[in-house]
Image (cartoon, rainbow, N blue to C red; front, side, top):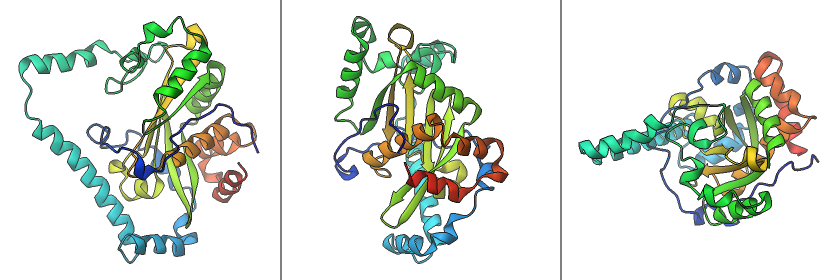
Length: 296
């Protein structure tokens, strides 16, 4: 088994006990990386292999066929998007003063991927680190103290978190820059569920492969990882947290996906699969992926 390269913290309680929310429903109603579709077309269809287990899952959801299950998933993601749009409409028009105030952060935060400050290198819709914690108070702390405070802060939230050494994150990001797409298998009681992921600068997004194939532009984000590089220069540390759509994914499953991601993107033994999926998708061996994941 490959060693864990950085520790990922997650809630111990099951997803049902975690507070749910629709933070992302209002601003993530589509996937910005439709280029992934060409890679998925080269992946062998796992639906036939797991058809019996998918049928059992379909029956547990009150439908008779896999196609009906996909349609139900598609409808669920469309309803989630509609709810986000309805919320925005119901909020009504903002006053000129409110509208001006709301526009200021987006104007002030120009995207600069070379900056080490999250206020500059993350999209305006994403909270920067200084909006989460008092970064000015942490500058005098050691890397170990910041790590402990970060872990403690997220201990009771529906998120996964990690403190990553800068050199490790640089290796991960360099790998992701050339290979932004991948598919990860997640063991289930009735076979496996596969997740499609994409690395987008300092964020990584995950969604169900079945849902992505059923409704590409409307697939719901199950897990979104954000990496904060504010302490990269001063402490050699990158803070990560992953927002979970708790109705769709449990905290321990999210933790498992992050651990798989780091082992494929940072482990020398399996990085070839990631490179093949992105650079030579026609030669990608899906069964080899499942076999490698089972050994992790």
